[in-house]
Image 1 (tube, rainbow, N blue to C red):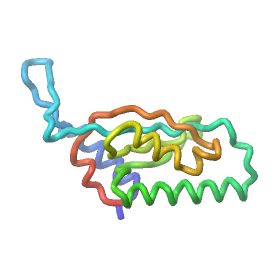
Image 2: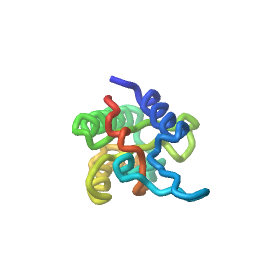
Image 3: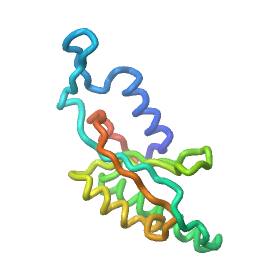
Image 4: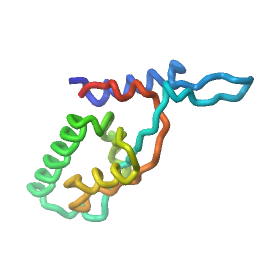
Amino acid sequence: MKTTLTSFLIVLLFVVSGATGLAQNEPGKTTPEPEKMTVYYMAFLKRGPDRSHDSLTAAKIQEGHMAHIMQMAKDKKLVLAGPFMDNGDLRGIFVFNVASIEEAVDLTNQDPAVKSGRLVMEIHPWYGPVKLKEIEW
């Protein structure tokens, strides 16, 4: 199982190395190569409105949150996840490999941390490298 940090570094390597599937057609213009690129749904996990839980409840919510992450990864619906380390309002990211934004929203709404109000998510379609799907958890 690769760590989230390793996974993130692999993605960063694709971007930095130019393996993002962009073809140079004419100077200054690039177009995506569909066989190398695909649509993912990126969710930004943000600090939610209800963070008043006692420490035991917060720990149980976090345990459920992590179990949900692992199940989505096992189901191949989540290809990348991880927290931000600066303790700001932006808490982490998910990158979903699902058929629609509605499915990404549904998976998000099943997360115990979202259900409890500890987190809220902002989801955007993102065009990224097909190889991202090959990352093993």
